Length: 148
View 1 (cartoon, rainbow, N blue to C red):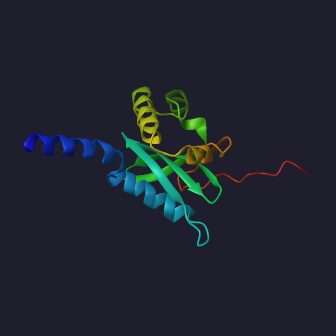
View 2: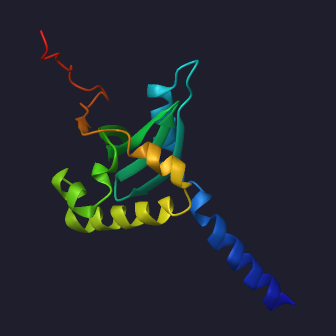
View 3: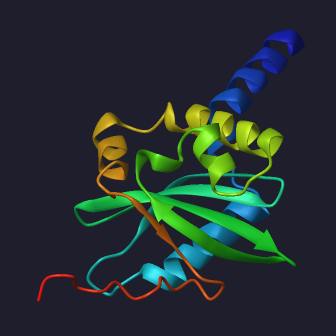
């Protein structure tokens, strides 16, 4: 009887393990909500993966979506860049300045976390085109209109 209970608890833990947030994941969600929530368009942030001072968060807001890459510097999370599918691979993360071992771990964690995300939501993450770098304050540089 005790063995069956133990096995059931392990199965339950493995099924919910990715849904249990740690302090880094909660801090990332809080930052994204405080930065981008609007009264008429709340941000949905899921999944969030974090390792070695870096995090990637998938987000949707209305009909738009994307992924944010964040860094924890001196105990404070900041957004490094926003992108769509462009930051899913370890290679892309290395190009963003993340050490190879951390980039590999982060990309693997993201791939695992996104397995439980519905396909229509994943498609929304891909809607964000290009890479938008953010400054230390979490702002992006002005986008200039090239059409005059």
